[in-house]
Amino acid sequence: MSHSRCQYLTLHLGAILLGGLFALCGTDSVEAGEYVKLLLIDGRTPVGQLVPQEPDSEFVVLQSSANNIALVSRFPRHTVCDVQVIDPLYVDPAPRKPLPPAPHGPSVAPSEYRGPEPIQSLKIRAGFDSWDRDAQPDGLAVEIFPQAARRVPVDAEGTVTFELFAERQHPLPHEERFESIGRWSVELSSEDYIRPGVVVVELPWRNIEPYENNEWKPLGMLTARLFVAGVGTFDASDANVPLRQWSRFRDDLGLHRGSRYELEP
Image (tube, rainbow, N blue to C red; front, side, top):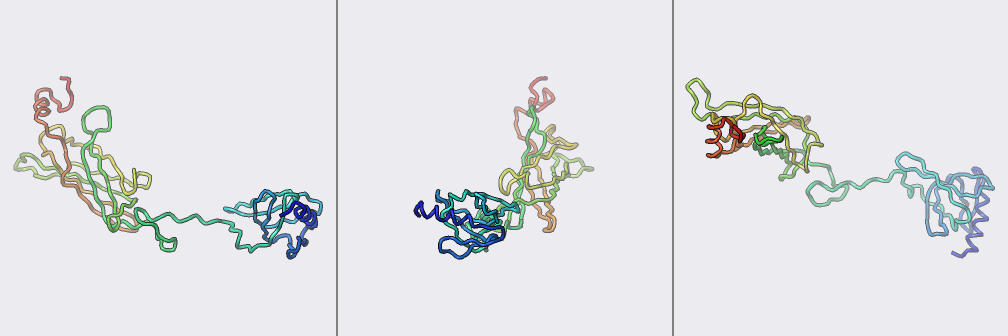
């Protein structure tokens, strides 16, 4: 578009009246309040609702909305080369964000996306661990794996109750061979997951610390029950939970020094 035409349009933009009409080089009359698209000298094409101005105003003013916030932009009249009336639907006041892809699956069309799949099963894996400065195990570290159909990992929220069972080496006649030696309850939230579908919790030893003596066999069983509100309960177990690591040297040293982990007498 030539510079002379831009000057011609600039003169005609001066005809804007408060709530009135104006005409631009062969286009239909443009009424203040209509949705328009401007063509600027620098090539930009802003769109919005035309705000009525005084006849001697030096600016063309557009108003648009985004996220419930009204945005008002002013453009010097000498920079406007053309004005086109557009459909109000062209101006989207709240652009929609694209839906995220389904977790761990192929991309699907937005109309087919149904959100995260619901949990259908639970798996756990446990082992003793130390989370302070000394070498003595402080309890169990348990990895929890909620799963949907087809083993798809999901971040389930709810309450998990754990119970640890151990077997005595040589039970006396009045003693039970298998005994529960620990119970815990943990709340799970979405912030606890270290990666999609995997959360790690720490279960400190209670009254019994199985690594200190040989009363218990070195393997135990941990059971878990996850309650998800509005969905149900899901059970899992690990039947090979190491309660202590067997070591002939460590056991013999413990007999002489009174501890399986301290090196000083």
